[in-house]
Image (tube, rainbow, N blue to C red):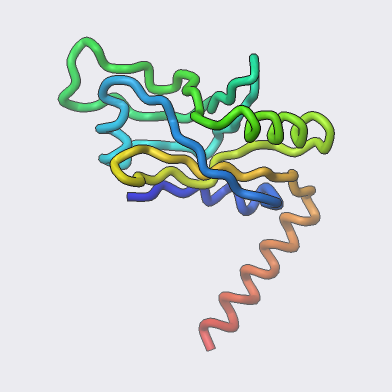
Length: 141
């Protein structure tokens, strides 16, 4: 099971990637295993020397009880202090953005692949569309 953020590669230049764990509660892991996750508009913010993912939507578990979770709450990312410090430095000094690229399970634990990215301008996006269309035409032949 793997959920990808396809918009990320269109809207950003991905400079580097980093794997992190996600702190989930209750029935969230069951929803992740089922694949009911949306990370399209989510991003990572660092506050109080801790990393949080914002706008990640994990659907409520069908068979859950009254202890179901809030679908779009902030979730803490599990990273080492050195990694958070490095990310914070890149975000503040070099104006990078932290975006999730994909969510997957590794040894039964939910992991997220973060992309250290720089936003594309409109003309860069147009260029990406042209390249994609040319590649489709070449593949058809």
